[in-house]
Length: 327
Image 1: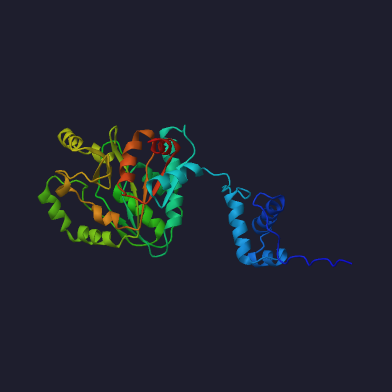
Image 2: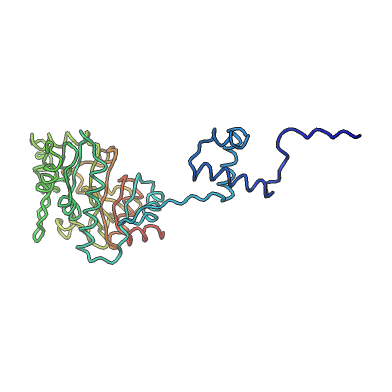
């Protein structure tokens, strides 16, 4: 009688496209991704090593046997645009409202409410918050609930304008009331009449005390102004001669009184010695700078600020985000 040969030890070689291999990929992937088993338990069940399990899981993803889908609960955000804008411009985060057709005031209120939520999630006990000013920031202050205990610093001088109820000093105080911490006010105009007056104001003890806090900021919330087309509170306080000089210098945007060209670079102008506000280098040193700006007419100004790396987080609307992603 002829003796049977012993069966070879170990699993037989399998083609990557064999049904047996494909089933094994699916079973291992299901045990890991659906059932929540760890790699050691799966290895024991199938009689293979943990390293083999890891390779099978990688292969299952590469061959799209496993497809990962990230979904959020119903929300006011357009998650896809939020992610795309953040990646395109190297931001820490972007928050894009999905609503496109709201009237300007309603859109401003929604952006303010969203900015309030983002700010509350960002701040920690002991943070030092810098606050600029703008119409969206005004609505943000209305929407704020209690914040972690922190200091609040006004980072730009005031801009009193006829027909605008907004007041930068009042805005900072309203936010500080939610943070239950000290407030550092800047009792000076954003643009002094001349360089000599600006220098004198900077040496005022109260103003100097506030400006010394600029280097200690851990977070700031700011607005972005547009110069083409005009939609900037800073631009509105200047006379026509100054406006024309700055337009000729290539200014397309402003952020906390710094002027920005289309490529994101700083526009050095005759106003530099007259500004009373946080400086560019101090602003760029802040770990988290949240910019709130919306409206299609501001899209190119926002693009310039993002290209220049002036901010780390953007809160905007879907129309702006779509324009930003088109170029």
